[in-house]
Structures are given as C-alpha cells and as structure tokens.
Amino acid sequence: MKTPHVTATRQLKRRLGASVDTSAPGCWAASFDSSKVSFLPVAVITPRAEQEIGTVLRLANRHRVPVTVRGRGTTLMGSAAPVRGGWVVDTTKLRRVQIDAEAGLATVQAGASTLALQQAAAKKGWFYPPDPSSKAYCTLGGNIACNAGGMHGGKYGVTRDFVIALRGFLPTGEFVEWGTATKKFAAGFNLRDLWIGSEGMLGIVTGAVLKLIPQPAARWTLLTSFKDEVTALKAARVLFRARVQPAICEFLDCESVVCAERATGRSVFPGQAGRPVILLEFAGGVSEIEEGKAAVLAWAERTALGFREARDRAEAEELWAVRRKCSGAMFELGDSKLNEDIVIPMRNYVKFARYLAGLKRRSRLAIPTFGHVADGNLHVNIMYHRDNAAEVKRAEAAVHDLMKTVVALGGAISGEHGIGLAKTPFLRLQHSAAQVKAMQAVKQALDPRGICNPGKMFEIVQLWKYPKLKVSFPWDHK
Ligand SMILES: Cc1cc2nc3c(=O)[nH]c(=O)nc-3n(C[C@H](O)[C@H](O)[C@H](O)COP(=O)(O)OP(=O)(O)OC[C@H]3O[C@@H](n4cnc5c(N)ncnc54)[C@H](O)[C@@H]3O)c2cc1C
Image (tube, rainbow, N blue to C red; front, side, top):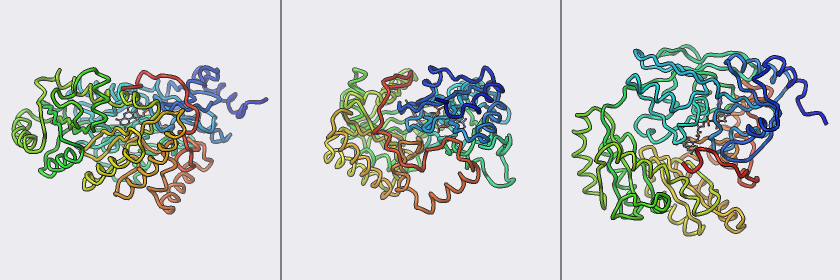
C-alpha cells in the first residue's frame, strides 16, 4: 500500500536531504508528546536553518500535507502529537541565543531552551522571568505557542509579556516578521499577539526577540503554614491587598504537602506536617527586600500557624525542590491524572477552596491541588486508576464539574498549558459560539488549506480514553 503523501515526501527529501527522517524509529519518537498518546507521522524534519521551514510549509501547503511543529514535546495537552499524521517539524536544532546587554533584549531561535536563555541572560546581569517547571527542556518556540507561564507569573507576567517580536513562516510558507528589535512598535495590526498562544496552528515561529529585565540583587524566601486551605487562601488575599508583590507565591494544599513529604521522605515544614503551606520568594534590591521584610513577617505572625525564613540560598533551594517534587509525587495516589491548570479570580479563592473540598468528597478521589496564588493559576490534579472503571467514570464527571465551576466563577479553563487535544471538550464552556467562529475564521484566513497542526483546539477529543504509551521522559515526575 502506498504511504499517504508519498510524492510530497519524496520531493521534501530531494530538497532537504539529511534534515528529513522517514525511518520507523524516527517517526515513532515524534508521534507523541508528554500526553503519551501516539499518532504516527510519515516524516520528521529537523531543520538546521530557519529557511528550511519555509520549504517544508510551501510543499506541505501545495500537497495538503498536515504539519505539526514540535519543540521538546513537553506539553501535557497532546498539542504536539501529529493527530492527522503527515510531517512533524522538530525545531530543537535551531537554538541560537544572543543577548543585547545594552538594550536588555535577547534574540533567540525557536528551539533554544528556556533555561539556556535564562543562563545566557544571567551571565550579563539580565533576567528572563517566565519559568515553566519544564524549563531545562522546553523550547522558547513551545513557550510562545502555549503562552507558557510559571511561578513568576503573578509579579512579572507570562511569556506574552516578554515577546517583543516574532519571525517565522505562515502556513503557506511565506516568511513574516511581526515587529522588530525595538521596545515600541505601532505599525499595523498586531499579529504577533495572535501567534502567541496559537499552539502551532497559525504558522511556525522560527525566532523571537524577547525582553529582559535586570537580575534582582537579592532574594528572600519565607515558608508559611496554615490551619486549612480556606485560611491559607484568605491570608494570601490579605497580603496582596496590602500591595505586597512576592516574586513567587506558591500554595500547596494538604494532599500536595503529604505527597511531597512521602516522596522526599522529609517534612516540608518540621512540626507542621500535612498542613497547607504558602511558599513565598521576594526579589529586588537589597534595601527594598530589607524594608519589606517587617510587613511580611507581621502578616505571617497575624495569619499563619507557623512561618520560617530560609537561612540562605541553599535552604531556599531545598524548599523549592520539595515544591517541584509535588507533581510527580502524586502518582502514589493513582496511576493516572487529569492535570488541569485552571485560573480562579482572586475574589473567588475562598468559594473555590470550599467547592474543591466538596468535589473531593463527592468524587471520592484524591485531588491534590497546588499553584500560583499571585495569579490564581492552580494545578488541580484529579487522580485515578486507569483499570478501575468506576474511578475513571468519577474522574470524568469530576473534571466536567470542575471546568463548569471554574467558568461560572469567572475563571479560565487553562492558564498556561493551552487547549491542544486534552482540553477540547471544554473549549465551548469558555467561549461562546461567536467567539469560536471568530477563531476559526482567523485560522481559515491564515491557513486556508488547514495544514498547520490540524485536529487541535476545535474538534472534541476525549484524550483520556486513548491508550497511553509506557514511556518515560527525563522530565517526568519533576
Ligand atoms: C514536568 C512539566 C512541568 C511543566 N510546567 C509548566 C509550567 O510551570 N508552566 C507552563 O506554562 N507549562 C508547563 N509545562 C508544559 C510545557 O512544558 C509547556 O507548554 C512548554 O511551553 C512546551 O514547550 P515545548 O518546547 O516542549 O513544546 P511542545 O510540547 O513541543 O509543543 C507545544 C505546542 O507548541 C507548538 N509549537 C512548538 N514549537 C513551535 C514553534 N516553533 N512555532 C509554533 N508552534 C510551536 C506545538 O505545535 C504544540 O502545539 C510543563 C510540562 C511538564 C512535562
């Protein structure tokens, strides 16, 4: 039987030679992302030069070959899985990073990792705040396509807030630049922002100009524990109301703390075992940090059951390491999780904490929850066992209930992971028919043949029903 797109793939190989891999192991490796659901492509292209992506897209557009671009494949949403087969473009060989230390700008290629940029910037005294926990692996192109966030979001913002300009190719293979390396740009429609968060469906980003900020001179870390989740979230609101802006403000509910404690074999907060905690980090000038400390300590004294300052950076790092362990540690509560990165408006924190306690009770499932309380982006992890049909049913019911409630509370079904395949059943809870139609019109205008990452966002897929590969990634359980 003839492989689909055989003529186009032959032409592709003639033009790009060694950059094209049609081997079975190569195609298999590109068939899935961190959702671990596999859809085989017929070729994987690993461009050595940005222009090669234009060649790929021109051919694909002519022959109507689906193209899925991937960075490192760390998305948990199935967004980088080539659900319609076709070609996969792997950007990881495009990883140049240049720092303009005078202007505070970085010019990067899409396949550079977030950590590589942070390290290059730090060497010159600059700081790039967006910090997905996967930052040692994930690419800046993937961050831009998902509008990635992280622990610094509340104070500094997310990827979108740091993108000055983008370059790349439209689905038709035409080269475009949205903006240039200047901090101001008001010439024409802002299609840069349309590309950010478009999950590889409106074109392929090959490079970007990103904004940097001065590296903070000092950091101070404080751990606080609370009687229960409602008290913790109320206390966080008191802090924000006083105009205090921690660089990081991470909340861990009781279940998350217990998981992290079991995984690390030590107490997150000695003497406060199993209590919900808020872990804070303040960053800024030395005197600014010193001046702010008294007010924050007084807040902790008033609202927390216990609090403890990290004595030095090493101790602070240990605390962050415990926080980073939480996500993987949850697999002792179930072999599968529905990992939801919802956003709740601050005014509804307490309502949400009460709702979540009820959901845990009603569903009889473990739902450890942690996240970024300065921006309301909480990771709600619905844990279940895949071979227990009753649990699967309860998990499905719980996620639907959760999503409806999030929207009813004025929140968002995703704060940083995007829609991909996994969140497609919920897109229409967030967006009205008119909003979805407008998005589809944009897609049709830029990608008339529907070749860029087809099958995502708009078509409903119940990804949790697909068989999962038994593979492990270096970033699993981190
Ligand atoms: C352990 C772990 C922790 C995580 N923590 C966070 C977190 O704290 N915050 C957060 O926001 N996310 C987090 N994520 C999710 C994920 O790491 C991010 O979404 C990341 O931005 C994906 O980057 P990537 O290079 O792996 O992209 P991929 O997974 O390869 O692709 C993701 C999407 O981007 C598109 N894409 C990739 N490159 C391009 C390009 N050059 N042009 C156009 N589209 C492109 C793909 O088509 C796909 O739709 C985490 C994931 C894991 C596994």
